[in-house]
Image (cartoon, rainbow, N blue to C red; front, side, top):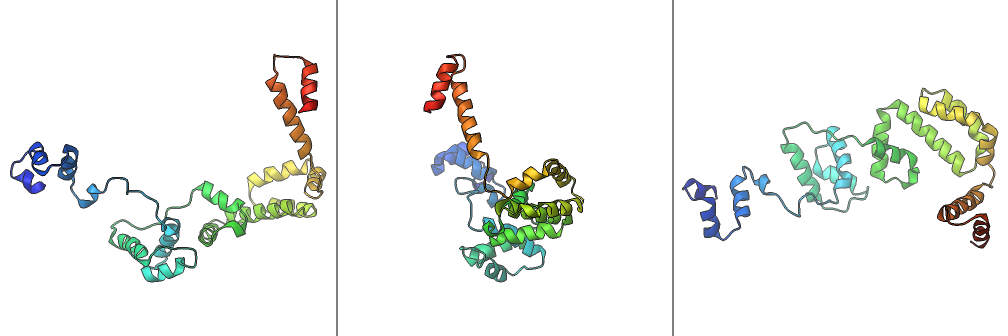
Length: 233
C-alpha cells in the first residue's frame, strides 16, 4: 500500500485497482504500525486469562518471570486455558518498556471481598485480599470486625456483642465507633434481635402491603373500600 502511494497513485486509484473500499484503503494507508490495523469485533473480547491477570501481575512484580511456573500456579486455582496464552502474556511484559505494576483493585471490589463469606471467594480472590490486607493494618482490623459481626448475626450469638463492641473501641476506626455508639443506645434490643428467633418481618410485610393498597386508591375512594381491600387482599 505504501509502495503504491510512493509511486504517485492516489487512494481512489488504488481503491479501483485493488477492488477495496475507500475506508479499507484509508485504514491501510494511515497505519504506521501493524497494531494500528487491529480493529473490529475480535478486539477487546474477554479471555479465560483475564481473571488471573492480577495474580500474574503480582507474581511478576515479585520476580516470577517464568511463564511455565506461573501457569503451574494458576491451574490449581481454576485456570482452564493453555500455557501458550500465559507465555504470550509474559512476553508482552518482557517486551514492554514501561514498568509493570499490577492495577490496584477498586474500593468496591475490596468491599465485596470483605463482606462475602470466606468460602464463597475463589482462591485468586483470597490471595488478592490477603495481599491488600498486608499493606493496610487498618483495613485488616476492619475486616476482622466485619467478619466477627457477620458470624454473630448469622449464627445468633448475641451474647458476644458486648465483647465485639469493646474490641471495636480499641481500634482507631471512627466509622465503626459511630456504629458502636448507635448500638449502645439500644443495646438490649440489639442483643435480643441477634439472639432470639423472632422478628417483626411478617408485620413489616403487612404494613408495606397496606401502604401499597393505600397508594393505589389515593384520591379515588374512602376508608370503607380500603378496609375491604385490606381484608380481602
